[in-house]
Length: 130
Picture 1: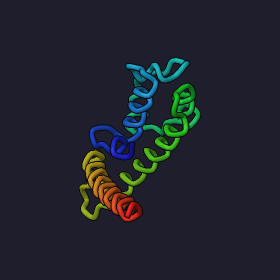
Picture 2 (picture 1 turned 90 degrees about the vertical axis):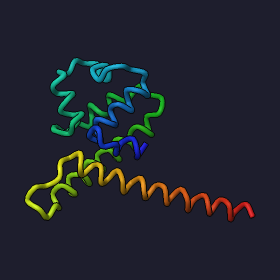
Picture 3 (picture 1 turned 90 degrees about the horizontal axis):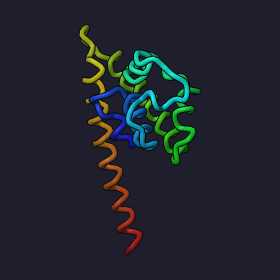
């Protein structure tokens, strides 16, 4: 799920909302909530322009089968959004990177880390079998 959350095409919260939509078998974001929310508000949450209130996020996942996994995914998405903001803010040049450029960097590093983690885990499993 981490790699999907970090995918640079969409803000991590938007990626999380898409994962929740798929987990619930829904087609559109407005279907995630029981009460109507404007499309503009949903777009702002999806793009990270406005903070998705926790009670709204929990409402989105309350009827999903994998509630705990989706809660953990929300925490990961919020953490990734913070890391991306820090990368943008830490830029030494006056033209800070776009959200997408910063997210591409974070996504690339995350994929590298996960690949090395999986390789290390595979080595541990192989050693344990012998």
